[in-house]
Image 1 (cartoon, helix red, strand yellow):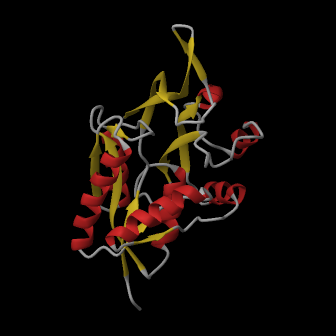
Image 2 (cartoon, one colour; image 1 turned 90 degrees about the vertical axis):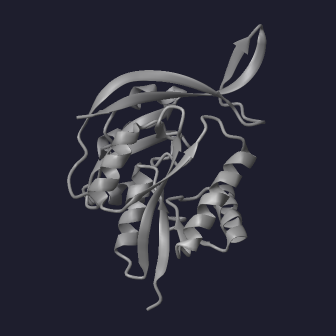
Length: 242
C-alpha cells in the first residue's frame, strides 16, 4: 500500500474535525501536520477569531504537530498566495504529497485550492466533498463531537456562543446551511473521538466587526458621509481557556 503523506488544513471547527476523523480511519493517509493560518496581529485563528492557546490545546489533545502560517490581519490575495506557496514548498521538501481540506460544496474554492497545489506539485484531498450537509452534521453529533459557535454573520447574533445540538440546528433560518458552508457561522470543536481530553473553555465578551465586502456583494450596506459602502458584518464571541 502506497502511503500518502499529508498536511491537514485545520481551522479548529466542526468540518475540519469530521474530515480529520475520516482521514484517521484511512490507513492510506498519514497526517504529518495540522496546518493553521493565524492572524499574527492578534494571535488568533484567521477568520474564526479563536485564541492561539486554544488552538495549541486542540493540537496537543489530538496528538498531531501544529504547523503555523502567520499572516497579517488583511493580506492581499497576492501576498497570501506567495506566503502559502513558500510554506507548501517547504512542506513538499519534507515529503508531503497531499493537502487535506474540509470543504463540502464550494466549487470555486475547491478549484482555487487544487490549482494552487498543482503549481507546487501537490494534490488535494476532500473527504467531505459533495456529501449532504444535514447528514454530515448528524454524523458529527452522533460520533460524540461537541462544538461551540464562535462567529456568525450579523443576522445570526443570537447563535453566537451556543453549542450546536440537534435542537439548535432546527432553530436556524431555512436559508442557512446547517454546516455553515456558505460562511454563515464558524465553530470551535472542544470534544470528540479525535481528542484525548476535552478542551475546557469559558465564554468571554461578544464583539461585532465589519470588513470590506468583495465586489458585487450586497450582504450588508453601511453608510459613511451619506454614501453607501458595502461591508460584511460578523459577531464573534471570545473563548477563554479554563
